[in-house]
Image (cartoon, rainbow, N blue to C red; front, side, top):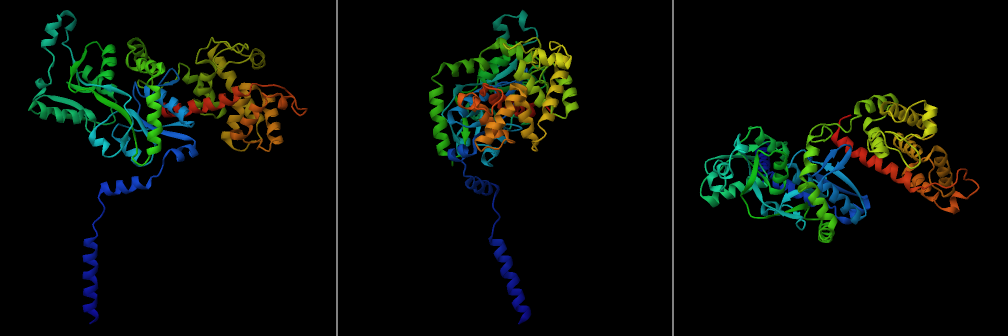
Length: 477
């Protein structure tokens, strides 16, 4: 009886386990997405819009220390419209964009994402930002400059049907691969799709055509045209699709965010500013050429400025991240060593004449300016030794660098009067320094140094840290 019972029990457990099928990857992903409840209200409570994008020469990049990109500029305006801060979340490649969105790593995909039925099954799309055709990118003959137009055309693919049996190289899960599959059916012959690793940027793939590593690729016409202006040997005139809508992606369970983003898109597309930004990245061939040639273009290298090495040297001496010091230098002078402010501050680090004399430096010399500026930063850091949190202490140091240590002490006195923490910059002393623009505060007997235009140090600290976050994404420590 005992053994019979055990046999029956084991048999029951085996049958039960067999009936309980493991969840498929799709079911797991579905359940995960359904559990992510982040809509506009939660984003506003958080105070930040988290936008997922990738590095590219049109989307998001660094040029001479300035953060740029079509998506980046639009995102800044969207964040302002939503009254939140902007946080950029980087996807290593295009394949990760949707995965990261559905996993809750961001709130919106900000990328030139073709609106496709297969993608709409998983996410919602915003109203289209613009329309684009997909075009074939191919090389002209080597001696094309000595040939007549019709002779060049005779050696190029001018009709998609000519691609039957030929190979086109694109990213595996891209809209371009999907279009090539559909095109094969439309023209009644197979186009062989050679897949490229998702880590390659569109610009890198186009360069592979230039270098002869691949024969053809497919990209959006606006991107192909701007790249062909830099590589005249490229032809990007053969369209392989009708006009397609390009938009941004949002999770299906974020309807309030989608509604507000669509409201903003519809309004902003009517403004001149939208067309200026679009032309800046997709039409202005001259500026694109200058950018691509620069060694201080993040798509080419990790350099921020011509002064990176000396900034690294002196930042290391005071124990600061060099990218933070670089952000300060950009804030002060835009990396222009001969710049001079209305107040007389000079050089890369914008050092005042009396401070330059005390430091015994020539502020117009970039080397001496960085050396003197970092030494002065360290002096201010030492003065703020009562602040325990290192990040807060850095922010106090930056504020003092901008408006002076004396005004900073007055702001701390205002904080004490108003019940704020005098040892915390964020939402405490930064608000008190704004108060020092008002007569009822700077005329108080406790205040020793009078009026200060508080909005300047307030924005100064914020902007340096915002830029620092971008620099960390583009340049290694």
